[in-house]
Length: 557
Image (cartoon, rainbow, N blue to C red; front, top):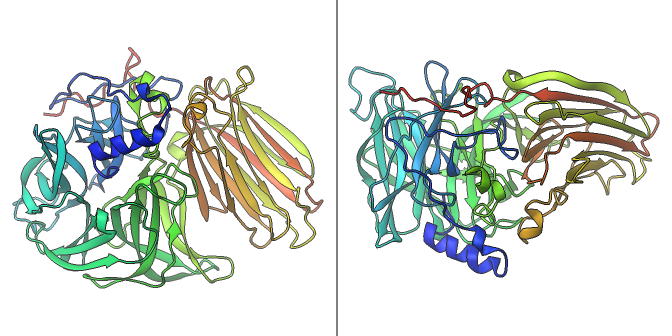
């Protein structure tokens, strides 16, 4: 949920930042939000993503309760401070979408009392009215969240509580504390339905433990088991998810489903600050049993954290995942405060498990949810060989966002030069701002993908924790290798080999990046690269009124 606690975490961040420009960490005052209408936002700023969700104003972090209703509308709730640009004063923000890209900002779903924070949690649809809160209806929504007590301005005990909605998730009525506690690090309940009862995974953060609780009715909970003692530790564990996951062998044949336990580390993740790891295993309704003791990472960047799966109303619902695209090492400092917002989500993703090319280890495959609702005109489609430079100017694309893909065939098993390269470079020709990446084909000792965001200089020079460079091994399969990506103003996501590996990275140029250059070098004659670049249409431009502002839903009764 948050780094240690809102107060302790911010002070720790400040002590680490030392001589950096701490004056930028100011909780700027924004007008208090209405209970009845959505917060109005301006989505035209040069750093504002156009298909990645971001709050209308203020500070956003963890995804919270998420579900899809019977009308096919996706509901996304999130940790939200509507009155400032750093974490604190935590509410549950709310937005809805027919396709996970075109969002309507809704009025804030859950408000805290003066001495409380509404912290991270989840939401479920109680279609069988197990709670008894929804007579004569099948669309009752229950939000399960951590109620954080604030005593004289100091974060105190954390307890699990619920609120219920009888209008499909728009208005919530607080019910009561369902798991009382005196603990100060007990948070982030994620609830699912398993056969004939509810299951909660919740973090005992300072104890590096995920507790599993069961309930027949969402109100009365019994502790069933703990998961602890393996994996990366960091300083705390938080934001657990327990989800049934489809599984496929290396030939693409469906195998028995497995269970995935997702856990956030914060701070102390392998790449610094906050990060996510997952474990694979079986689940019998009370106990999660890992198949091995391997710690696997969700993303090889630094900006993919606190992910949550949409509630699955049946076993046939595919697992769809959204995460917070930032890192607690610098989330309070990024320069989007000038546009009165901080933080965005990563792309919504479809996920499943697949064996690696040797059929040995499992990987969580992660690919963007159907992008067709926001895909525009094709800007480039060509095949290249050996040594070629291809330039695409997308300065006239209103969204300043593009999708690209490169599919490589004919890769020899041996004899490829260590300098054989496919690279991309997004630039602003006037300012020199840039981000770049690429893949060295090479021999078996190479096969490295890299991403370098150090050339986007509006923030990089100011923060020692804003790591410039990332790399990851990625191997061809049957002579083929692929890369696809989404560039969206101040966030880039790249997917290797159809999502076998992925990276999420935020960046902040002084001027918009408007040209992408692809370069191939020292490729064997047998290799061919098929390139495609497609404009992305702004989801927010379609939502804006004539005044340029996105007003959201102003008519919820």
